[in-house]
Image 1 (tube, rainbow, N blue to C red):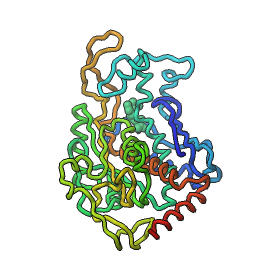
Image 2: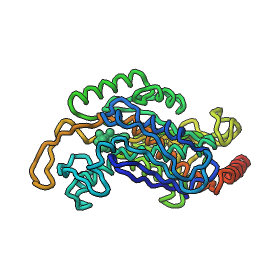
Image 3: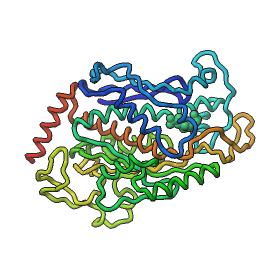
Amino acid sequence: MLRYLTGGESHGRILTAVIDGMPAGIGVSPSHINRELKRRQAGYGRGGRQRIEEDRVDITSGVRFGKTLGSPITLQIPNLDWENWKEKMAAGKGSAAAVTRPRPGHADLAGALKYFSRDIRDILERSSARETAARVAVGAAAKRMLALFGIRVLSWVVGIGGVSYRAGAGERPEELFSRAEGSVLRCPGKTATSKMKKIIDLARNRGDSVGGVFEVAVTGVPPGLGSHAQWDRKLDGRLAMALMGIQAIKAVEVGMGFEASSTPGSGVHDEIFYGYSGKGCSYWPLERRFFRKTNNAGGIEGGMSNGEPILLRAAMKPIPTLYKPLRSADLLTKRPFSASVERSDVCAVPAASVVGEAVVAFEIASSFLEKFGGDSIREVRRNYRGYLKQIKSF
Ligand code: EPS
């Protein structure tokens, strides 16, 4: 079983992730992980904090001479801002004025009530999206494993603050991804990118924030990950949970998603063909196979991957820390106040899209190992080849 946990507060000393169950023999180095961490830090619309942080991982267990050992992998990312927060975030003696003004849209109020804390900092430090740096580090390791099997996880932004980008018919995930990598907003369209930038500028000037939508695609996935046999083994359910677990994500779609509910069945379901798909596929390269000409299912039917690319979409709400005051009530005095903040992002959708890749990569790696798992990558490869042979002879 592949699993991970993260620990760490936004202004604490360090973020930590422990991955357990990664097979031995996978090439993982700090430079692989740092490249992903840098991608997460980019994006037009971030606030002052990203000028302080320069995320770099320290691998403190589970990797030797550049290869995983099969033992728990510990990844640590120091918070450079910690220097300014030592007193306020000390594990031992320290001091800080209590935060008593809950921000609408944040975990502040629900967390304070639940954990019986009269200092909202006890909650906000952990609910902060800073934690996603640790998840990106975990996803980077998962991507290294998936790459050995020709599986890629790619993302791009399709909406910010109401401006949408619609890909042309038949555009491949790889093309959209490579254009997104060259955009400050991870959006494949140039015109949409500049419109989105304007929306962000407008929001910043108004002291407001904007959300958006990103897509994640997984290519090279064999049929048969996940299972129809039990609710918690369904791949779409697991991927949806992984994406919903990212801070500020309010909705997830698979393939055609909500649109499928208002389209007749004949326009939704992807007809099945057999022959040369011409599209190529890691598990059955350019040979005869079952394939689809459309992919409204987003590569998942009955909770199982069907051999087509997995297509997911996630919606992020606007960041709740606003310069423009929203009404709230003080935890101690119970009196109304209008909150204003000192520092915040205006838009973090491009970063969320990189985080989306990471959590999806982890979930795909996890379901891959459930099916083909072994203690070493050699054993996993052997199991995978055996399955491919079986599918080929079907
Ligand atoms: C965040 C608030 C901001 C963001 C932070 C997430 O931090 P600060 O309060 O220090 O200005 O910059 O995101 C990151 C630090 C990051 O690396 O993504 C929040 O409240 O969620």
